[in-house]
Image 1 (cartoon, rainbow, N blue to C red):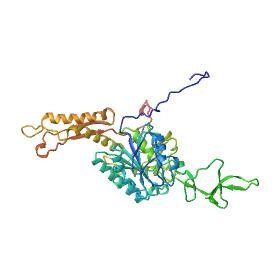
Image 2: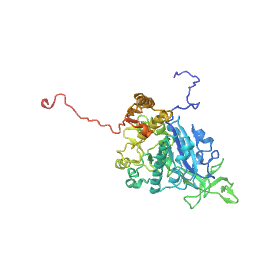
Image 3: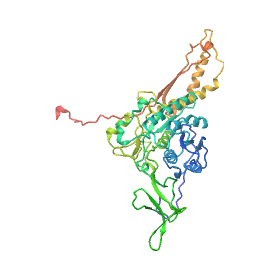
Length: 453
């Protein structure tokens, strides 16, 4: 830029809200609320599609909506911070009826159906406290919902909050491998400052916003009570705002203390290719507004290597720093199943789910199609090659997009379709690998050799 005085105009992009045509980024956020507390522009039990934080605010989901453990606005904000081009469905269910974390998660398939099966990954949040047993029930219910969705040809991944996580007892945290839920991940990442954020409430009532000229002063003799000061008399005595003759007494309350940043994880997943791990350092620095430091549910920072290694081995998703390198990053993309499973990581599931959708779309037109057989009853070569080509065309885009390494499709001609009316196709995918550990053998070398020293 030149040094002469001038008016400088920078050309910006993104204002038209045009979306990436890929459906891989379509995500969902399911949350509980009540008929009284729900956003003004939303109906309960109905999915709404958002392209920006402003869309959420247009429905009445603002920062003031996040009270009493609710975190929907924060999660939406973090989703679009991680993926400004993201595509997000949201749905609120009645917390008076769905009065446990598992019951809220159990509405995932209802949300997917209302979204016409378009959701590829979904985060489910819960405004109340949940015990370890309740989080486990939510995880297993999420796996049930995801398996049901797969049978209905609309598969998706599920993220839940590790609301039960307590840093002081991190070593005793459940081993998620034992949950046997290959379609669900538990996120315990949270910015410690955001977790400790407090808002001002009328005691026993609603959120209070200070008006012009108002300030908060502590009540003498109390460490928790405050009053709204509206000015001073000429003698210097305090004047407090009153309602029906009674002084307004206020209190500061935690909002996000039991919240995990699942919206941020959801945004990272939606931004990633289906084959990419959200812990990829080069691409997924998660530090930013609303998440500046690596912390955990409850607002704690754990920096002990042994503790982090234990939580990683137990397959939690959390945030961490890499020594000598700026930024904050996820540790991995674990699911709640054995590390030896084919579906141990989110990218494994997203890859197979995408291939499932592509193959079904390619093959649906051939349903109930006449199939020629040879004199001995075997399938004609034109049939086997025709179906193989259909599948190959469907999957070739995943190879060119570096979402799978290779694939193979085979239709066995020796199948008795005349008796069974079933055509069996075998498709195998070689996935893209992930460099979870990079090992370098490093040492000194004397160019003269030992015998010449």
